[in-house]
Length: 331
Image (cartoon, rainbow, N blue to C red; front, side, top):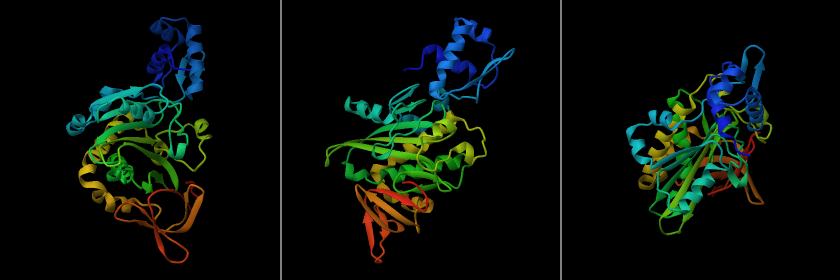
């Protein structure tokens, strides 16, 4: 079920978190007070809850900053603006990655950017669902066309992780780590994830859809569906209110800069920085590849961004892919 136009208008009116009288809302929307009540109750399925107090009216349980193109553009630097060919914001979508994968098949240009307020089928690694409550977090995908084949961008997700940490550090959010190959962590809990989907000929031009899910505020009711330890920026910052639009713009500044430079320089420019954020290095871990599992001590990454795992016999093996579980953390 889609969110209705009236519900979108209601959210805009109530986004400040203050009380608004039912009469005022009904007059502004051109509907009856009972219709206001009905529309508000319907928002519960999106994880948006409200309070109703006699004599005061209605308010949302927490302020809601909806994404807006103009507000995101205001946070972009000129170089980033030149790299963006299209910037779309969807109130509801199945998956921002899926949307741009399909758009790429219909010749969408490099530099297409897609945000969503809510995903009905957010995509994680290996087909997992990415929990995506409405208006709470960042759900972002970028389409980029590379002139070389998929092998040339095999370490792209590591560079994207570096870009995300750079953006967070610009917000004075420190202590963030990276878990090979594509997870963002804080103190042993998952803060975000990266999903890169590549299509094209093995020896010719290819397109990549780079997806990022980043938790800003995860309602506890939605978090019940998450099967691993998690955190969000509100917990990390002590519930300091962060502007979603400003963060979205700053993320684009760093992400697009890295993406645009990656084909020319590859992973080499990001290796040392990534290693500085590595939260796996030195930990006992289990690597899962399909039905196989490999146990050992993580010894960082090699110069191609592959995982180094010291086995029980002392030999160090190199792995290009897989899922890692370590010290109480889910993969």
